[in-house]
Length: 218
Image (tube, rainbow, N blue to C red; front, side):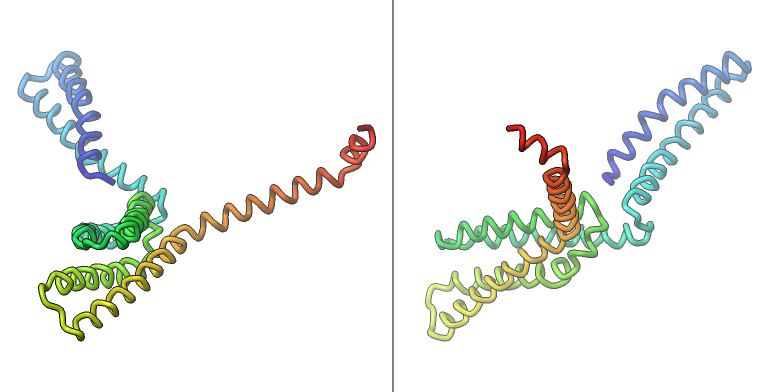
């Protein structure tokens, strides 16, 4: 939930409510101007506080999360956003044309995992290996590779280290792709279930007497 959007929604409800409270208090109940203004301000302030809280409550209920779980996930997503930014910068510092397509695909997969988790926070639990292991490894290896490959003179040992780092980066890339499949596992299972249901329905129609009769009339 975007805090600014929640606050803005609270303001949208609060302003007309405050005006109504002032009008009713001043004209209907003959309250003094300052008393009516105070009641109006109190009512508006209360709504500004309550509306975001209600929106957050609905969001937590929708995703089946407790407030503590949501705070935990939000904190990890904020940290992941910083790491993704670092990784993006490091990947596009690599000058090899052969690596460009692979780097673009890696960033696309990582952003997809992040956006899915941001949209549906409960998916975070299916991507814990990504957030707590694979993303960190990708950032550290890529930044180290960029640093070492930028050195003007490369010894045999350095070349060997760079080769090993590239191999490990490829392994991490494949692991992150598997992380995406893990995040989407429920969707894949649901799709397969729908396919099985559709196949069963089609086969039932084909085996029905009416279908056999219609085929015989052709």
